[in-house]
Image (tube, rainbow, N blue to C red; front, side, top):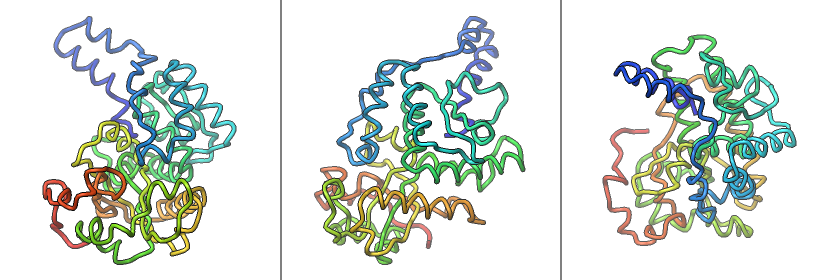
Length: 316
């Protein structure tokens, strides 16, 4: 999430005023404390990309369906219980979007106060879940965004580092692999090797839930909240920015909780210390190509669509 995503109402006000429609401008300025909640009912927790968040997400979903106030109350009860912190060590809490002070930069406000402006919609629902699934990664992203704002202010462009941080926050998956050849296949756009020839190397979503047999060599966690929002209605071309995490072979004998804690620790440390971050820090990954995530990809012909599984145009 970023400042642009929270500036829609202001933009609507300007557009309406420009056309001389005073009544539309007045409507756009009115605080919208709640939004239609129908989208919350569309979350299918059986999907692999949502299943990783299901334990907490189902409870939040019911609160969100009950209304904006019960939803924020549920988020804040969990934040207090978990003692989460934002980028500068402030206790995490969630506030209504209208409570973000006028002119305040979204990420800077979170870092300084601990308060995350949160709308009653799916985008911010999944953003809040990320604060609990990978709290150290979220805090690291927030700290670096706030530091960049301190140094450069909020301008018409973010710059390369802030763009990369935003890509991570919105659209990243964490690609964990113990096999350098599979990492090379991902980075080299070698989809037939990654998804067909080495199909058995992928962790089965079912095995991860019931207990892995340790034979896998790669798997994915969805991090980006905009990506999760898009996957409410999945489509073949839906492509993530994959952040590669090299893990030991023993990783695939660990529990899900152990794996997630390791990802949270190692990725947050990298984000905190990386001198260079840009679009080349990621590899494109068509999400519906992941074995076990989408029934049609059981047919190898699924990967023949070069508009989705594109050949590489550059060395990585």
